[in-house]
Amino acid sequence: MTAPQAESRSGRKRRQVVDAATEVFLERGYRDTSMDVVATAAGVSKQTVYAHFTDKATLFAEVVATTVAAAADPVHREVSRLADTGDLAADLTDLARRQLDRVLQPTLLRLRRLVIAEVPRFPELGRLFYEQGPGRTVGVLAASFTRLGERGLLSVGDADRAAAEFNWLLMSAPLNRVMLLGEAAVPTAAERERHAVDAVRTFLAAYGMPPR
Image 1 (cartoon, rainbow, N blue to C red):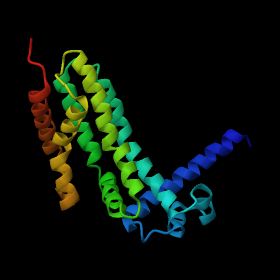
Image 2: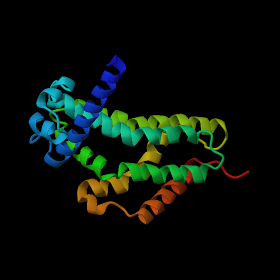
Image 3: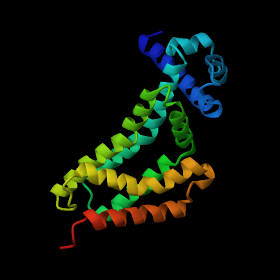
């Protein structure tokens, strides 16, 4: 047995625990989740769970970080590529559509609600969710908008503000509805498409360069 094999097996066990914990936390909430229940759901011993995570709070933090990264990392890669676009309106609309699809995933919505509910006890998790999710997205957007401004495709005096406004145009209405009205309020694919198109049109009306 080599060390890399042992690490790989350990990594698989860790992912197994995190995957099970994600389902348990989202189903039961933080208060009603125990390490015993997570161990049972993961099909491992409680000792195995504690070998990877010292307590429930540490495990919950890992669930938050893992879930947010899984949704956010692809968006951030796509936003970074936007700086090299050959068709800004089309590519920004495509990006907006995919960003809506990811943010409105049921798992991420349920986790967002759970984190908000636990912010009084775990403010660091709210900060983690924000910084790795919307905060990071706005930062990457600002970098891409700066580059697009340098290429003469956008007129942005303040790229951070432009990025925040684009993110708000895209996310505010659908996310507020779903967070307050539940998953039955998740817009259909056709509604998300229209919203993405409208958000991009409004943004480019404010920040786009006139055709030459």
